[in-house]
Amino acid sequence: MRAIHVEEDRVHIVMSERTFRILDQALNNRKHEVPLKVISKKEIVRAHFNFTYAAYAKRFGDELKNLFGKLPEGVRLEGYQPEEIERETKDTTAGYAPLHKYEIKAKGRVSGPAKGVIDFYDRLEHNALVELEEIELEFQG
Image (cartoon, rainbow, N blue to C red; front, side, top):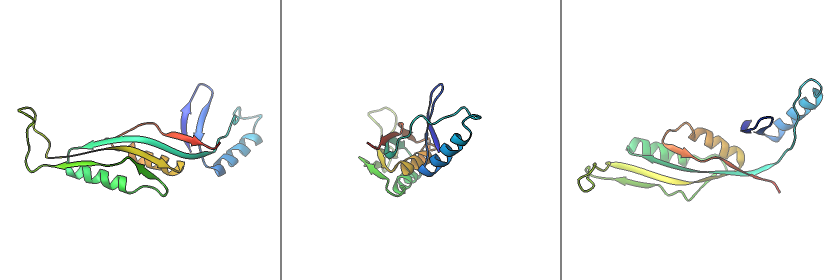
């Protein structure tokens, strides 16, 4: 389960069909004691989010490439082409600050089944080198 949007008197929650059935039955059994009710239900068919990352040390670049190389089943990367540069020596930029000896930058979109996309997002949001946009859900019908 994951709460994805909270308003004053409403909460949007992503959960499995099985969990929904259990929760719905429990709320129906206690409707006079628990002032909660399901207003609507939508089936999620896919999800996606955009990301960017940048690192200036080979170790971090390798970690990022490894992380994005191990996607959950059914999840795929779109528009992902990391740009990696390794320099022999630290060059300068016309007398200004020196260029990094190593750098990697990438951007793209992660898409696929909602559970896999959300699980991967959860792994990425703990990495300070990765900037994430919000997850967008695609619903049935």
